[in-house]
Image (cartoon, one colour):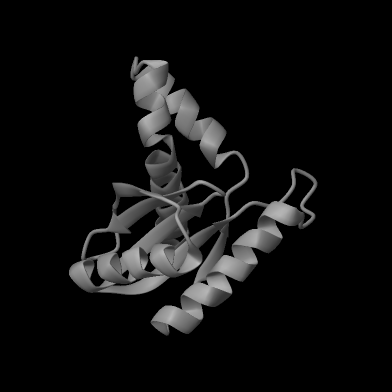
Amino acid sequence: MKVLGLDVGDKKIGVAVSDELGFMAHGLTVIHRKSLKEDLAEIKKIITVHNVKEIVVGYPRNMNGTVGPRAEMVERFAEALYKSTGIKPVFWDERLSTVEAEKLLISGDLSRQKRKKVIDKMAATLILSGYLNYKSKY
């Protein structure tokens, strides 16, 4: 069963997908946000093409664990995604996922310009990977 991982931001949505067995996460694409309707349509296409059965959405809690405006925006997006796809998204704590993605890309010696293009996809991959690792233990 394939799982979709999303890193939802104001301007971009990083997208990752698992393999059929749900063991590995692969960065897929970055959606440049236009409107909620168009963003959801793009995600629905990906769900259909990749036969996705589960969705994990990065949940950006504050460092002290509280829920702030960014997390509330992700909650609204996840609710719209659920209404659009019929798949109830699972939230996954994404604190520092973008920082970790940045460190990995720097260690891979990518230029700032190249990092900027793929960081959201990498963050989505890390979110999905964390969820898949957790799921494999239980």
